[in-house]
Image (cartoon, rainbow, N blue to C red; front, side):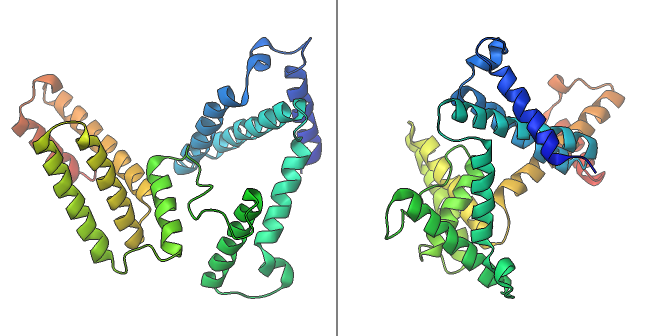
Length: 265
């Protein structure tokens, strides 16, 4: 068994060395929270990608890259006198204890009760963070950096918890049709309203997906992967038939696409 505490101490010491004003790395020294944040997001996606590909070896490496991002941010905060890595670890430890009273109290809640307790605790934490004893805004605290589909789903779930929601999935579907009509109307009218209406349409689709029990982000990721598989199949088929992709007719594209679907794409 590896010494996790020792390995973490070594990593923290390495980070301090990289940020040493006199002996550190020039690139690491010039970084800020803002400049590092995109890398943090990228590393989180690479972890998700390794999981999706069931790549255990790269999963270990990607988790290490993501951990380094946490260590990097914590080090910069420590340099400013805000907090250190130990404070980060303690805060998440205490938060998880608060959010799992059933584990430490020995109760046996139902899944629905678990979700309600979890959300109630999160609401209390948001209220405490905002200094509002009555509770912070319902939609507060949903990170703006989330993928747009994921953020739309979180916003709509938050609103639904206080009653702002359709009662039936058919109503959500009707809203999607309504928004599609508004896109058509915006196209006819011309101007910048098209993008705005497309946004409303996408939000409506996310809401409908939620009502149907589907994760819109995961659904689109799966659709992207499916499209890639089918397009790769079409490319291979075109090469075998001596066809140039840039010169295919609409009918030829359709034939290749149908063949890709039939071949399990």
